[in-house]
Image (tube, rainbow over the protein chains, first blue to last red):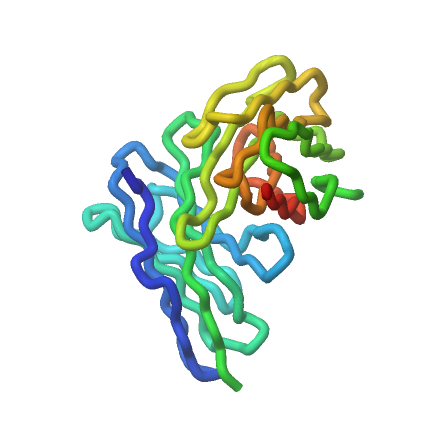
Length: 112
Length: 113
């Protein structure tokens, strides 16, 4: 039972364009969502998060949108840079929980 | 400030052998977790701890044991290694509030032959 799903295993984008990574969830008890970025041979690093009381959070080139009615969140990267090429994981936390549930990941490739 | 330190970085085991993956954090985080990463399956939670002396099972706990005798350390024990446990293992830690999620270690790549 995959509660957090990233349906696109890979995404390829031109440098300077927008990258949009998508994530769907099924558990209504999730109240906090996070995006992580992972380079090969390194651990995931935190990128940006959003609480369920918000629908948008922005940090520089990264914006996360949350659509609670659709149980969908997306990460927008504008403009995309070659250094953004990595695997991106979305993750979710239940209300008063301590565990993060991760999606399968999306490999983003930004071409120069 | 070292963050989350995992040792070893690489390990090859024979089927049936046991070993312990070490994890230590120096940020005084209450929460610690172990995940495994397999192709196409993302990060799956093995065991987690909300404080010293308290541990609980995650999604895929079978074949693994943990203990948390101190705030800093959270070792993962493989009792009798199987080829299905070939994976990359990540330890992570966090403050209770989880506002910035978990801080991850750099991983241990384990191969069981």
